[in-house]
Length: 132
Image (cartoon, helix red, strand yellow):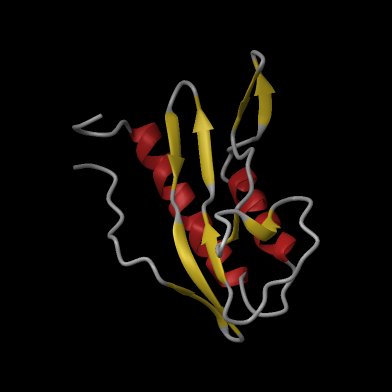
């Protein structure tokens, strides 16, 4: 859709953008992958965005925060609620939190991170804009 985003869509976008920043801060070598997901999930809930089944459909944050990239597009460890792996140094990770609500719309921001001992470096250089 082109044009001006509603205030609700703008808030949803800003929340996902902040959630992605939180994930990047949690990603570092030897850190549990589930920590990044839980931090994003808790932030979304604190902002009032609950995940639930509503009228037979899921809404909110119902997928993982990311996954590994390599020979396969979705490699372990996945970054989700049930993840059991740790982040490895120099691994490339997809970082993709998202929120979805039928009455507002959906937002997913997806970037690629390089895991380092000091954190994650965003390898994506494409600018983020809500409206065009």
